[in-house]
Image 1 (cartoon, rainbow, N blue to C red):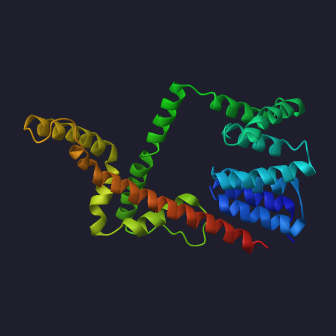
Image 2: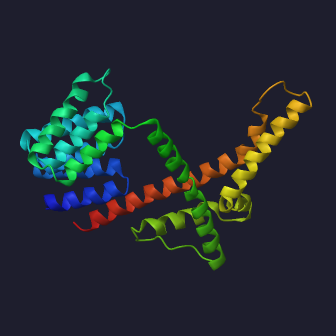
Image 3: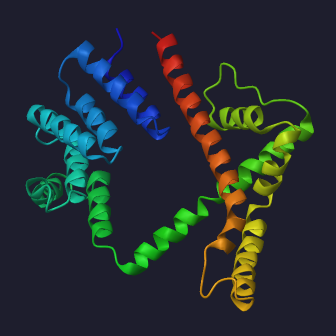
Length: 268
């Protein structure tokens, strides 16, 4: 029999890997085996809440409430439920939104210096974010695009070594991503994709210049009267490249989560 602690460890690893559905499966399996348990309800709720969709939010709330019915002072449940309520739309879910303050206050009463209390405080600050914070978030999101460039350069290094990165019987995420990238984007027909990926930053800069020049020429020659989207066509190949690399990363992440689940199954 797998212990509750083992299920919690499994859920934590899957959650860190981004396997929200796998977290829910593991937590539910633990609940089926051991019966109601606040820690397992907490992971089940977090697995739903991480999806950030209305249906999953409803199920997350059900799990949070079920867990708190067993342990009203469970810090993880209070913190997770408070965060769920903080992001709730006050118009669509007024009751849920109103509960955020009550839950946060209870958490402060129980453990004001706990990591859970700090986590909720950070979530409260984020809900009160300014326009400047939105700009910073947009910049951080744009920086994620550099993952494509890093992935493409790693792929080129692997190709020069002349062999695939072994990913069999491993749960190492980086190894699985490298193997999946090599499998999907090797071969001469993918050479343009790899080239654009390796030089993504420079190519996007050139693309921006070409977009402006194209629109300027079109206006000056009378082809268009004002700004047009024709110049944006230069960006189409780059968007396709980004989508290719992103798709490979998502596939690799799915393989990583499947490998983790398989490794947990082997331990039984």
